[in-house]
Length: 596
Image (cartoon, one colour):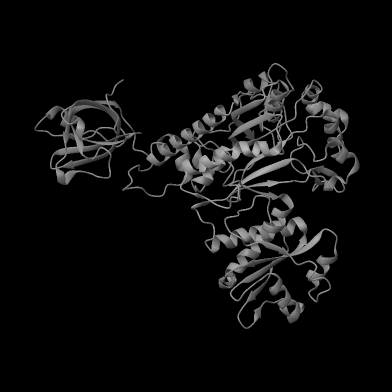
């Protein structure tokens, strides 16, 4: 090694030792001819000193040093005078009197400052273009170090329970996960394509057929989806697991202790809303949608939505009255405690949020001590308005928001308003972690693309409750799937299910969703063929590690979790990708571009 110590380990006990340090010039200061440099590596900072009276040669060389030059310094560890001790540094009791100095590499002037004292807000595109410099910041290095320990903890936990880590293929076939695939053209089989896996779904089920019994993997997944705060463009990592001869609660009981450990070890959040057995709450899908307006509810706060459809049937407010009588339409109310403090501007912002979720508007009633303030009270009438206030348990100082439309639209709109209201009122306590499972998802729903067509509502590989008997004898829209999602503070962190392992059940489920037997064989032939050779009952889930860590650490963006993230448009500004391919590359894979 070029160094004897790192820049974060020397203490007073090392005084009089001759040491060799390597690192970057972090800060350069000239104090009356004596040059002080804070030398930095990922372990910390150490102050090194160049005194012209002790060593003129090294002092002359040190005068030429600049920020971010990479150097090697050899010298004696000396104690700092009492008034010069820096208690903020681990190495603050000592400094190095340098005898030998070697410049290992020079640096151009960095595009932004790394010194905390000079730190100014840097645009994200600059940080991403020069990510290798940005990575020198201690907070990013600490985050990557934490992520490493986070993943190591997951691996150790799964291994301890007898799960075997298996790497599944990256070059795979297209899958029905719901997002767009990344396609890879084949050189050997021109005109045909691989797909990068959206998840190792089929492979992990085939491992169960192969008798592996307990599988896990820190799996890379690839989806061509637009980025957002909690979703990085292109790729992400998940703790993927599958187990044989398991029922739903076996999977939940396997994962809950790990999630509690991760919360306690890697955050300062307090676990809340556990049930009497210290288990995570299990909320049926319909209850989650009706109460919270979403299947990923933030249950750190109450603010529950209530149905008032029956109350407003035949009322004088035509919008409510019409919706209350149309099949599939509802009127719901959301009482916000202390919401009367919202300004007109804030109420308009909430209306905009409702509109963004396809609602046509957002009616409201402000409850004062001596009156109800609202444009709709005169249409409802005082008696009905008072009944609604009573039904929602609203008190003076509260506000009641209303949604009237198709059920899904009302849920989405009021759910978004609920979340925004909680944000305004400071109800999202960053010191709390509220985990919950959302269970009993519908197996099927009406297609939003093609009128009259039934489609899979969630994961097509889930086992329907009731199996083949339910598929053959019940209304498909009433059938529930053995499907469950994990939610933390309003973020979906995992999806899982007991899998459909019976070819007869699978063919029937896909038939209901409008697939022919030939289409099912073409898309999932390998899986169905495998199931014909003795597939065990099995199930599993996949934890979104990046999203969980982002939520536990209260980061502003999931991109902060990655060493080399893409920007919001999916571009790698550092490597300048995506970029065009050469004619030779396109010819090798049999692709000709045309203008569109």
